[in-house]
Image (cartoon, rainbow, N blue to C red):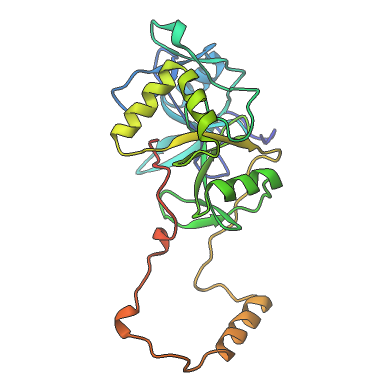
Length: 282
């Protein structure tokens, strides 16, 4: 977190991260869908709630970025600004109301790559396709290239688990998690599924009922945060020397090699290159 930023300041980055909500009473919770049980953060981050209520007297939604910066959108005239709220202090549990015996670790530990993720699936959302990694702006849908290198083991595991590409999340505690249809170790996964907290099992059932038949898997952790992203490519950008050379080389190889049926030409939407494997409300 940038030490030069203070609660209430305009946030210099993008709006992304682990989703929490608050109310005027200072409660802070996570919720899978509207109308489902609230999982309250305990111990309650009172200072964080106070900071938010000074910006939004009725409370509201916040995001916790991958470097544990809490941010929120504040209405300014006809538009919204993203403001810095603070940091999420050490939190231990997500607790269902009146049912503390079914609490869930908010930050699981002692996990190995490939294990089932035994907590709620949330965090800053990124995407991978081959060697490319990006963050997609939810408003413009433009892909911002990730400029921070992921650890080699994390990158290799993501490429193995997502051979067709797809999305993954980074939690405020630097854990990398993703959704898979085919776990790397089915026998181990069945055993771990049996041992998952009751709350997490019910979340998986709810999402299966909504067509998301995937399981959350722990990938590893990152050691450099925040994740820096660049600007998306523009059609007015000047080509680099390497790009010009590649384009010229490709153009030089063009020629009548075979007959192509005009009906085989298709316009491909860039947004469909990779599977929609991680709905925003998962």
